[in-house]
Image (cartoon, rainbow, N blue to C red):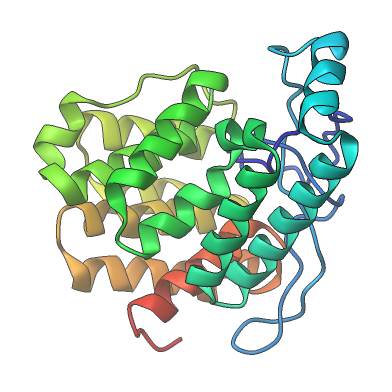
Length: 262
């Protein structure tokens, strides 16, 4: 996943080696700083891969800006997205959605890239809207493993895992081994314990992601106790405690929303 996109963003790939992959622009070069209690400090960042939106040429972008109020509207939208991301990391999920929705009003082009909004909608139990957000995002970035998984997670809550699997979004091959294995597990069904075991002695980031997605898989199967074991483990892992990755914050937000003690 990555941060929201503007029509003519400045592309950057300065994220950490194992940064969250859902796509859209970024606001800073460090993943997601830690925030004050209940999470460590806050610095503003927009996630991983900043993909350029090739659907708009510079000239079309200029026409759009002329119609809608220009670059100032786009800047205000990005500021709203920053605020939404910070609020989410602080545990104010409803507040984050309000900011993301405001960003879309300021610059409707942002909707196709607001994966952060999809994550927030999941934690508000607005699963239909969350699935729609991720499907729109994958239409723009057909190689995003995590957006595909999160679409499944939303639809599993709506229709059950078996039915959601029939609608599973196929995407391109993820370069990260742990996410390839996680993707296959969600798409085909599998054993979350094997996923965690496979990466338990690997890089800290791989263990974090294996634990997080193992827990999310169990949640999609309505196995809350097993989900708790793995998501709490992801939070307590070295990567979960120290990383600025947005997904490290998400793991903490997950525990907060489920009233799980860390």
